[in-house]
Amino acid sequence: MSGFWLILQKDLYAEFRRPESVIGMVFFGFLLLVILNLAIPLGSEISPETGAGILWVTITVSSILGLSRTMSRERENRCMDGLLLSPVSVEALFAAKMAVNVVLVLLAECSIIPLFFILYGDGFFTSLPMLVLVVVLANVGFAAIGTLFSAITAGTSRNEALLPLLFYPLVIPLISITVKVTSMIFQGAAVADYSSWLYVMIAYGCIFTGLGFLLLDHVVGE
Amino acid sequence: MLIKKDQMVLIVAALLFGVAIYTVFVYAPTELVMGPIQKIFYFHLSSALVAFLSFFTAFVSGILYLIRKDLKWDVIGVASVEIGLVFTTLVLITGVLWGRPVWNTWWTWDPRLTTSLILWFIYASYFILRSSVERQDTRAVFCAVLAIVGFVDVPIVFLSARLWRTIHPVVIRAGSIDMAPEMVTTLLVSLGTFTLLWALLLYQRTRTLTLACRVQNFERQLDGEVL
Image (cartoon, rainbow over all chains, first blue to last red; front, side):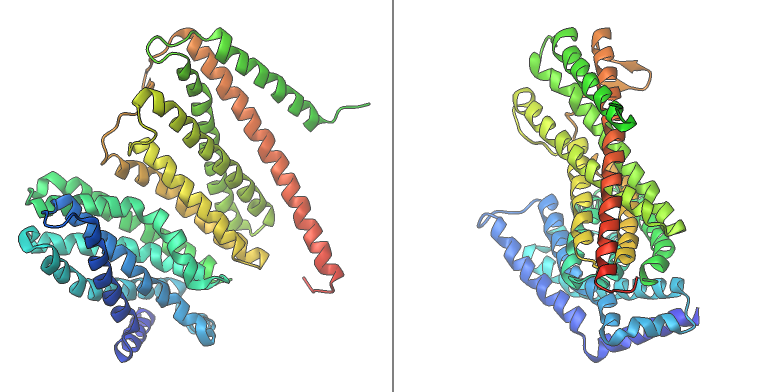
């Protein structure tokens, strides 16, 4: 467990020293919010479905910048070898890296989501606790797959450029569920109407976190 | 001259294909509403079966590779994903061809269509991953992981795709099949033929890839590399 905290601390410390991941994600997310505005006809109101779609396309596309960094950072100066030689289990390594990803994406979202409400209207802002819940559940799913696959892409010749190609096909279901739930929250629907989808999101997070724990050992062993 | 066993299977498969085409076009009755375009269904469903069998094989061989670390399972995995990708493409193409006259649209965001398309993306990325790793054993591990994660994703993809409304016909429900008996026979013949074709392709591809692997190793030895 101490290994988990050490790696988490180390990565967050490095990020606070030079916040390249978070700033990159926020800047790119802001840019995407502006670019996606091109898809909306001038002067027309957007529906909650469109709003939810814009928000999550922005978050998923910008978060790839942070997700790909966590493992490729260890590749430089062969830090990964050092981590594997240290008395830290691979499970703790996975848990720590996944936690780092969840925290970094969450930090970026703390800026992107308010920017979304400013740019696209705060009429969508209905329930903060449910929005936070959906954001956290989605982050766990993204981080689980992102951590496992950024470990894989860090071991390839194309490095970070490969991650989006592997990551997006696998997270499309999670994105579509998240967009659905978010649009229902934007409409102010009752929790009972979408609670079954929240369970699917929880299941998704659990399944891929479990797979990450099982499979990371094989991936970094190479 | 003796005919080898795998050549025998090839001949049987070719003959069976003749039978399957005959049953589809001559034996099976023409559907009342859709007309002859419905006949594409027999090969459409059979291709879907082959694709599923392939991805399942890739999933199992992925697990076996990670346990045993025997490159044999990697080769079977690649062969399966190759075949699965080809047949998923066939499913998508036959579906689009059928959808244009019947649904009056090439494409619709129906759960089954969406699922097949996302599957196609997942397994196409398998080859992109494969082409970007040089070392044989590293590549095998990465590909095994992707085959496992991809297959686990399939039911979730299908579940999430239900968010879009469906207009895909459900022909086979639990306990009943909404088809004329001749159509059922035709479908079974097609399914059998395609399964045999799948086994044959998998065997041949595995053998070719194993030989290619050996040739590569010999070349490396000749270059004086230590394996």
